[in-house]
Image (cartoon, rainbow over all chains, first blue to last red; front, side, top):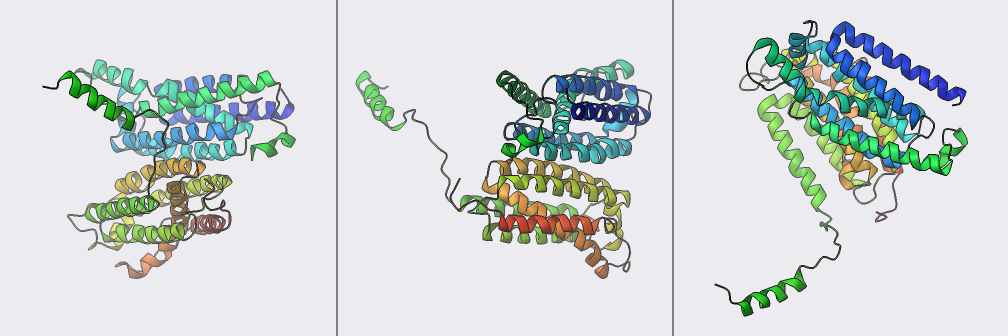
Length: 208
Length: 217
């Protein structure tokens, strides 16, 4: 790993840690564990093993990334429309409001992950980090809308398994996220096998 | 009831018509512009019905500008793929701009500036602004980027729409208060307007200048 790659790793860890702290302060422990700790840890690990040293060909990665980013915005729209923040607060410590949810996950964080597409187009290593953060977040976070939240709610308050905000669109970004993971892994394996090192600036022209 | 002889005649006839050679979906050249006009028209009517004339009027200006720019330039000569970087920056700019708008409760202020235009049965407020004019359109812009990536005509329209909206929406913040019932005032979005408009103008110029050869895709 080069010095620059170590710097990017440090930046990514710092970003993930700050994001997790923000989530804990606003949303409480459940979203923090799922997205901040689970998605972030898995994302960092897989990024370090794949596209940190072998940035993915943007011609292959951009379509699944853009599909996932768009699907995630639709999912967030459903969550916002049906008070996801308030419902999560009801099954955790009761801190999150829908307005806080909107600012963190509807307006703030999307600024970062949409910029991730720009980094991917430039074949930058941090684009690889953002793609892994999103994809692993989808892998861990989306099934919880169907398998964790509604069950916890029914256990806490009684009643049957029922609608929880975000359920109907939860699997869409999961499917496109898995597609994106497959692209990154297969691309990294191929480049590793070819002994190609793409992180160096001189090799970036062919990615344009 | 079919006899064996009649079945085999039908089988022989249709076997030659519907074989399994690879085919491409062929669409007439006017299909995309007709689709965009139909979809845009429907969205504009729905916006008018549910959100009133002010919001529908703003969006209609964007549709006219985007349609005109698209049909005159990239309809037959797609934009170069590397414009995607600029398109992403424009999408981020619009979302950042929306953050300033939401901070100042733009949707509620619009209603306060034009109470007659937003009287029932029209129902528009801040939450509807965020859901229908920020979050869902951002998703559409990101999917539009996929079309731009694959040199699809609708991708070029998406780019024209995003870049045009980057100019029209911020500029409207300075013009709309002129006709309001509450007098000229700060409209949420004014602060970030120059940056967003600059990104949009640069994008429009690139769409006009960076095109592939006609018919190259």
